[in-house]
Image 1: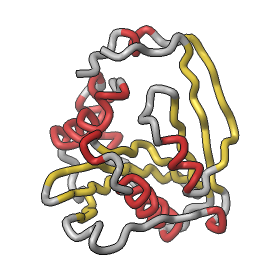
Image 2: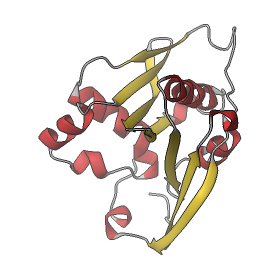
Image 3: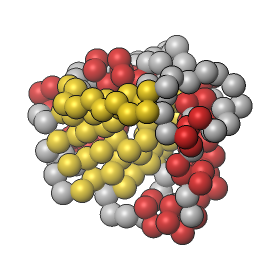
Image 4: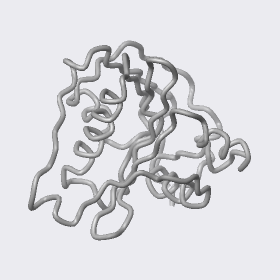
Length: 181
């Protein structure tokens, strides 16, 4: 188990204008075996697989402990979309957007560790942000923390997000107890 810091640092970022958006899309041949497909139906087991496969190394635990009916109702809310990145047919990562009025939250985003270092994260994030802007977002926001992947904050900043708030608190006990392997 990796050591974790004593303080949880959560960084909130936003884009309030499409002009801030700096997409980076991969081209062929890098994307020859890649597809991004929307999850067109709520499949709780697959959703939990994605969440765990992407988030386990970073101690994502909330949805793993959530009541299944509550999770289903969250995923079925109007404005929630999930796009899955497949590489050579295998799920490599996903982005979940949650739209409420003019605001779109990047609720969950990430890659499985095995797919790091290929530019896939910036590509998938760019596709999700483009979708949000195309669907009329007036503001897109996300939060990340010092327990997320090592490239998360830099990727958000490079895509055009700006920090609007940073919170620090003692590390919650549930993260201290979370299993990472």
